[in-house]
Length: 338
Image (cartoon, rainbow, N blue to C red; front, side):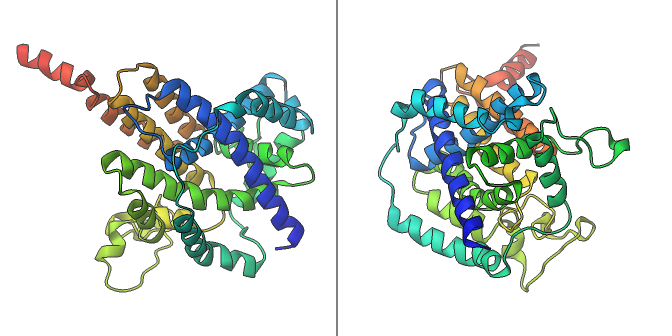
């Protein structure tokens, strides 16, 4: 990877993260009751990643309404980002002390395992789906209102456009960059997002479990690794064993950290954010938290349809475990009376 490409990757990561942090902070401030759901640095960092998705979805909505004018313009996205920063920078908070020593150690470990081979090989991209995602992102940047399908008979994009909207946003935020740089950037985005999602969910159960959960998601990824007594790597779902924990095509957190970044991986990060909001909703008396949780679940569907099913299951669990007993408990009481 050239120095220029690496600089573009880091600039995209910083700009997308900065705008996402502001948007995520505004969402947390508006919808989440901090007395019920403590907001530390991990939660705010995960909210920043969800905020970047929210920002790009908003831009994509405007892009569709304007017939393709937003991403086709080199100025529209930077102007929108500048407005967000100007209006929301006062709401930025870390939510506590960041353990920079542990963060640095985690960066070294994850970088050695998942980034060093990419730098040595020159790129994280390969054949398969990445050329499609690059082409669909280029279509947005060229002024197409929505990406077309991979073949005429498919009609429209075989994937939801969430990933492509975020990639187009990253490209416009850093003039001179490209979708290839954006796809490389998303690999680093996922290296932070997937462990963060695991940490935030674990902290809902036990406040000191975040680092353990992040390490497990980054280095273990499933019970299959615990049950297996020898190395194994399954590349086909038809040969799935150990509950698909060792299948490269499954939503296994370890495999999702390997490049290239794909919609399923980004959807997994958004699913973690949605699940955290759903759990926060279940223990809060503020009904508007449910609105945020439902919207987050919908954003999962914009990124990955299979993981959208998982988000719906999380919503069902959240409703059944809500503070007042939820819909499930109420239905049970009615049946008992009958």
